[in-house]
Amino acid sequence: MSFWDAAFLGIIEGITEFLPVSSTGHLILAGRFLGLAQTDFLKTFEIAIQLGAILSVAVVYFKTLFTSRAIIERIAVAFLPTAFFGALLYKIVKEVFLESDRLIAWSLLLGGIAILIFEWREARKQKTKKEESKIQAEIALAEDISFKKSFWIGVFQSLAMIPGVSRSGATIIGGMALGVSRKNIVEFSFLLAFPTMLAATCLDVWKSREVFTSDNISLLAVGFVFSFLVAWLAIKFFLNFIRKNTFIIFGFYRILVGFLLLIFFI
Image (tube, rainbow, N blue to C red; front, side):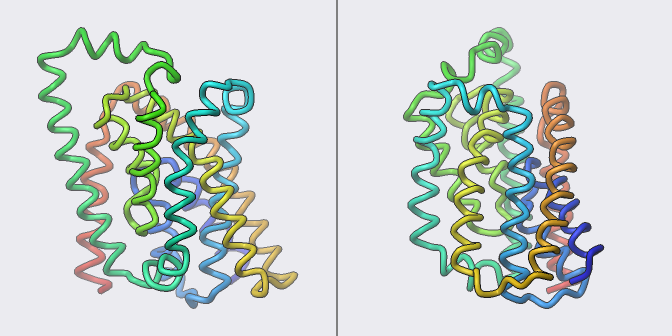
């Protein structure tokens, strides 16, 4: 892996981490596109640079993330299912799921279909509940997301251990299905990413510590910096985007990418 490979992967991570398109899936596919060997270091690199993107959340939401007790408690509850399943299935995810291009392709495709179906159902609801939706959109995040909802959002997030599913997509669609407003679940998904990816990165780096050399650490730093800077911009974009738009475009994008992968690369 070269400096430019690490930078390119960092940019891909920064763009895709908070969009419902699967950053892990895109990183794996980008690595295939660059012709990089699927080494233990590359697998760890793809997980570790996600922390760079997640730290942008700490910058954007510093006050909320570290001073709001109600939100911190809900994040903790939502984190528990992911921590449990992550520890339980770590070896399967690393050695089986991340090796399967076909699994990534089908996850992208089926996830896109799921987004389109969900948005279609939401559109039908909006026609009969316009005023109710306006009121719901104004509810504060902590009031909109109960501890019970927090737990189930964490369960939905656990589905993202399958590459191609998308952590943000699973939490956002899951949260909206539970009745959380679009704006609030997007922000909660951002906040939940912080402890989730911090734990995932620390676990993987520790278990894979023998693969690191001085050169590898330099490459990891490059990917980390690029993912942080690009993700900071991506958060701003996504927050503005969801105020006026649905996720339909991401559904079609996922279907297209998954379909092309199945035809041309698998």
